[in-house]
Length: 250
Length: 307
Image (cartoon, rainbow over all chains, first blue to last red; front, side):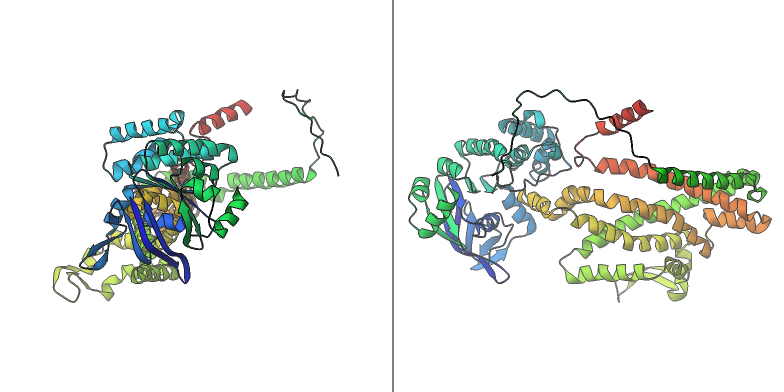
């Protein structure tokens, strides 16, 4: 589903990603772990072209992200084509980023009706079903400011799902939440993983990674230090840096 | 080590008696209130008893057809000039935020020019545009022209006023709109982008509606300023509210009462704008106040309860 080959990313002279090679299979759940500044979030944002990569190849479902290859040259995609690619990739942010001037339902039908040109009634129906799925049937008409952080994040997950994406990206989805609200959000994500969604999750929730992830990737300093099954990476890390990191967070 | 004692109380405790204390005396407030009251009463008394106010003449001219026609012209100028100002302001603000240096530079120079010269001078300038460009041609730059027009017949006085007021306003509005746009969190644009929304759609549906909360109050200010600045068109002999009053008192010398008539009308019109602004602000506050629309109703009920 996602294939990264020697992906590099610079901000000015600061090199944030120094050659990332990864492969995510359809239906796989991958958790990215690592200290802050290790490039996990940047890598995630490259996958839906919120950040442009400087070198390497990054493709989703066999299609290069943000470019087209023709005649041995890379051509930048037009804005509408980038938007079409992004519409197939859901993203959940640390700060939720719900649209505050719209109710939960309006948040969920905005992009489906305007981008996918879905009928209003169908979009509403889809939105209600998704809000029910994340346990917020009674919050359909609430504005984000009237919801707790955990409820907001679940609306944000439902909003991303309303586009029927083939891949979901989670950028530290529980880091801005009160501890007692984390559980509901993780439950929603767990359910999604069981339903077979392909997911890449940047997280500090080791319990979630151990239980749900098919693959755990440990990043540090812009490179992948090690990756493998959670039982292996979390329980028997091979690298000193992974050991040092895990000893601090576990 | 100091120990912290906490009484566990699973059951909510009975609330102790409400505090009833003797309030602090505030003689300063009483003195200030007395001073204000005395001044207010003396102003009202003098206005009522000074015969030179000529209140009967004020009443006579308040609904004079010439004055009412002036009111209509002033409202018309304000509305049309503000529409040009707001539309132009949005275009200039989006240009100013463009990554293209030439586009943002053009916007900067426009704003620099129109904010840097007095509105009065600009109005007179537009009035004499015929002296600068006697003929106005519409066509391909440096190429053939398709439409020819005589500047003096094309630029009727109304158009001169609208151009002068509207183009000047656009410069001020653009800064207000720009402040509104950059006040919206970056995360909103990113969330919209991640949902596959394009730049224009994001601007129209996500960024501008949220920036309205920041844009509306200063725009209300600008509209009130505009309403009064329209009186400047009297220098190019356009008959608005103020100029029609001038025309009347230049004949009958009832200067003071007619100035009062004019002031009453300007005050009435700005008061209407206050009400309009209140409702527009409430509309764009959707989702930003925790309490929803019930708010106003409950406040009104509370108010009635008090009195």
